[in-house]
Image (cartoon, rainbow, N blue to C red):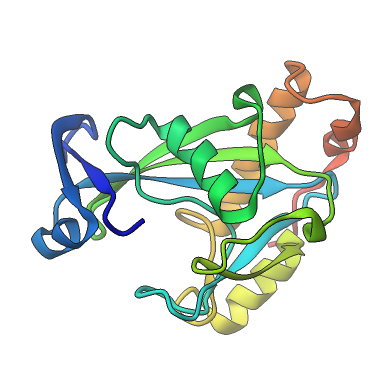
Length: 200
């Protein structure tokens, strides 16, 4: 996995330059690349969060509100996101039910990120965790995440959202509601219409 060739992108546009380098070279030379963040929610409005492996080189043991990874050679953002869900938690998602809702440029990390959202109504015991990447998965309510962020902070035990978690969650709720209205999800996900925003 760590020998995969990663896409290099134009810092200004986020478009691929046609060059590809191994992960180690990307970080060593501080090159710009693409990554994905995938948020998985259920009909209660909870997010499927995961604890990063204790052996990870960055943020070992931290809890995260999203899955994802670097976009590799010959991949689109969506291809990468679908692959990451399958590899990290064994979750197969229909491409139409993986909704892209934002693309962001992060200057410090030198990355262009595309955020996706999807739903999962199963039990976490059904998921197959990629042990070299994840220690555990657990459903958390947005209120619980906000409370933990207020005590631990993102530099403590949490990597929450792409920007500000409270705002991110409201955006996800709006996007997912629009997806339901467009018929992207079946009847099992109708309760999502009844979400209420978490308290600040």
